[in-house]
Length: 155
Image 1 (cartoon, rainbow, N blue to C red):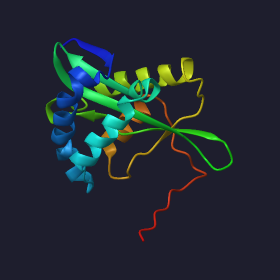
Image 2: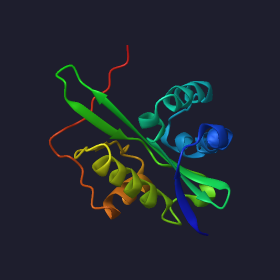
Image 3: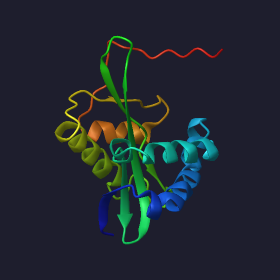
Image 4: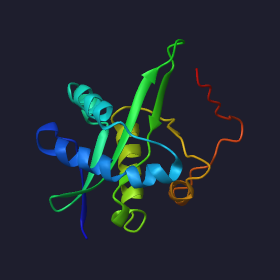
């Protein structure tokens, strides 16, 4: 398996990316999460309109086959501070955590954010029950923040 990392091309990659997200539901089911494929498709279409946002999507390909994807989001808070969040790395079950795909994608995202976007602080969320993703983060020497806890409130 020879993995090549590329940026998302909406004309070539949209159907494959949507199929990858649909296949990723196996992992989300384990974590008690769901994905709305219609909302995902609309968000990807919206991101494709901006080169910066389109470049926030990194794809891992084995030949012509899409085997993984990584995403980040940048936003500005009400104080004018810029924040960056890297989302869960998406892979198919047969490729998950075996071939270093997640690590390759994260390293590419880190490199792009630092060199191109000039961002030096990145947030990553890992559910407590997602030991696979936590293992990848530990391998990359990313430590859990001991000062912050994340709280959620449903209205």
